[in-house]
Image (cartoon, rainbow, N blue to C red; front, side, top):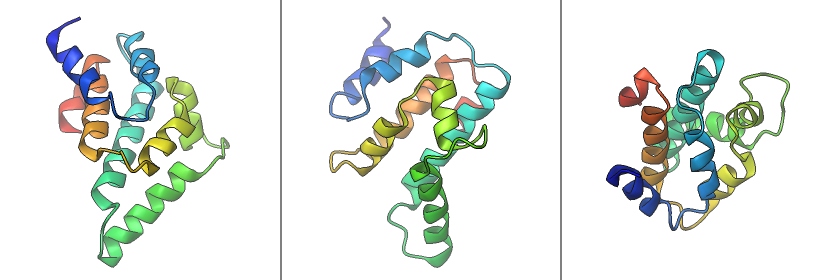
Length: 129
């Protein structure tokens, strides 16, 4: 393991998202096609959730409600439903939901974790996330 990899894992020690999910993404060296798009959608949604979770304005609150409803939905009728994306990427959707609701949730650590995974999974746009 390289030092950067260890540092990311250290930030996850107190995060309720199980560490095995981190390793699940590491088993795939490159995300291609639909899986790369699904991953980008998930990271964008989590980033929006973090940025708007305590919003006061009507527009930002509406953004939060939209992304929160998407995350809380248990539907699998679309390939881009939260549950479908998590299933395709090997993430536990309930663990992510639990992490977001946890009082120990550290917003920036979670987003940085997903950015790190994206950068090591071969997503060219990871630096723009």
